[in-house]
Image (cartoon, rainbow, N blue to C red; front, side):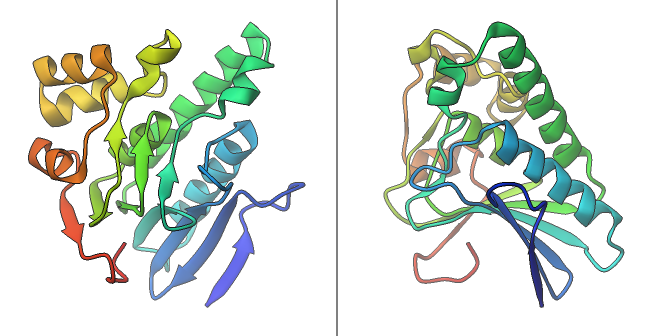
Length: 198
């Protein structure tokens, strides 16, 4: 078993670990695992590292902690950024999730808690989404900030739930629980809370 930072930046925000042919990419910026440009860059590096490793057959993306997979982009970072940075930040995040989606290895999002905003966009780029049973919330609440999902969520959600439901979820920004996420097809498999599968 090997564990290293995807890249030794000032802080490790995505841990990379390989066990028995599975590369685990763990988002780690408590309490909400919100992503910054640095986290997205480390995630991108991890995706590429797993792609090129012939010993890796499956990629699992998960969050650290028990309550939060990812709450999306770091709003404080965006508030203090100029428009030019925001544009390239969103462009890079979009490219990263496209790379994740197009990786010719099985990609699983192991949802260990709340999966909202850009966190749900990350999850929807995976081939399969497993969620731990519990009180987790799901949704794309970006409309409450006056924006739409910016990293491919508008297209991926339509493919998963259909156009009308996707529009309703995005324009209301409402959050919903695990049972509805499973019924909509956003979550593929539900595992028990004490299971090591998620």
